[in-house]
Length: 189
View (cartoon, rainbow, N blue to C red):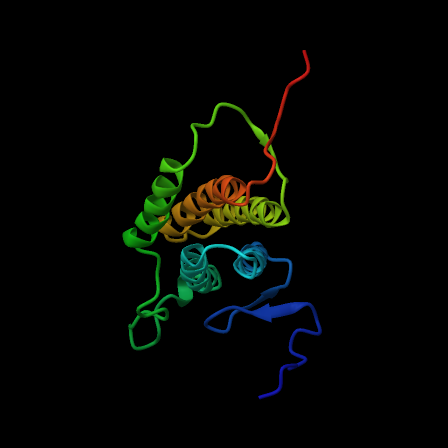
């Protein structure tokens, strides 16, 4: 199989099910941003961090492939001609959200209460978390936008929302673990 097909040379691409859309379609922007997020999470995973975080990040990356598949499937193509779901055994489920929530709760137990806004930075690894968080928020906004036009699974949007929270808390926890400087945001008076 060749990596180049030339079918996209005219500025269109195929969704799951074969429907062709312009490459700047909101659905393409949605799952493309999830792909970008997945790459940044891989960058975080490549850092010198605790193995537990790496294992959770691999699980998240796997779920993001699922999110991408969901976003790449238009509603009219969700079922195959034989009536079976196109994405059989794929989907975001409650336990995916619970994993993120449990991880957030565990990290927060080891952190002092948050009393101020922090500026992203202090350590390269922490900065990667903040970049991933911002990309995750953008992916969430795009998924919400897409949902206005073509409904997508509610848990998909919830997962992206919870994931951005996880990435924020992971940044705080890694700041603590790496003994990095946390810079407080101080509003002007």
